[in-house]
Amino acid sequence: MLDRVNDDNRYFFDQTCRVKAVELAARLGLTARLSINFMPNAVYEAATCIRATLQAAQQCGFPTQQLVFEITENERLVDKEHLKRIIKEYKRQGFKTAIDDFGAGYSGLNLLAEFQPDLIKLDMDLTRHIDSDQVRQAIVRGILGVCQALQIEVVAEGIETVAEFETLRGMGVPYMQGYLFARPAYEKLPAVHWPAG
Image (tube, rainbow, N blue to C red):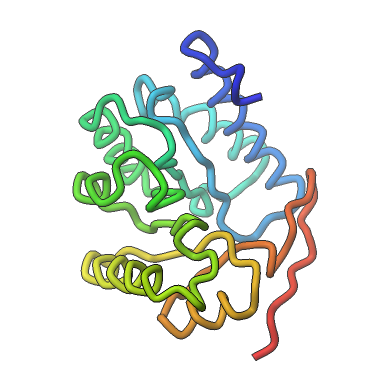
């Protein structure tokens, strides 16, 4: 489906996905944060683009304080100033912001230098086999130090083994997601399994 997204339908696709995510979260009774990935190049004017998301939340009775807007590092950023305006508007309205897939994309630390989100999500390529990889451990420790200094929360993505979980927990990573905890499910909340220990 993403291969069919182009300049002509990018805005419509972005808006439709946002509304669908809020409607589904409300229907499922989600009590955790709802992360909504957005494509900066699809957002023409931040206050206008967020309007449909807020209307959907209001109509469905979904608490807007649970919304987190995530920019993915995998999309080439055309206009950094435009992204800064988007993030500034989202923060002005009281929403949390995040960088998704941190460490896998086009801009890395440069993006973090331009704006400081509330949280970053470490890409699974950084966390995969981290228990046996000294280089990845050093990189993640460095990122954790930067995030601690900037008061940015860290989420580790793609956790699949207990060894990865224990290593990251030992390094001080407070939040994790991945197949170790739950598998994705279509239009339902999957059962969550926590590792013993």
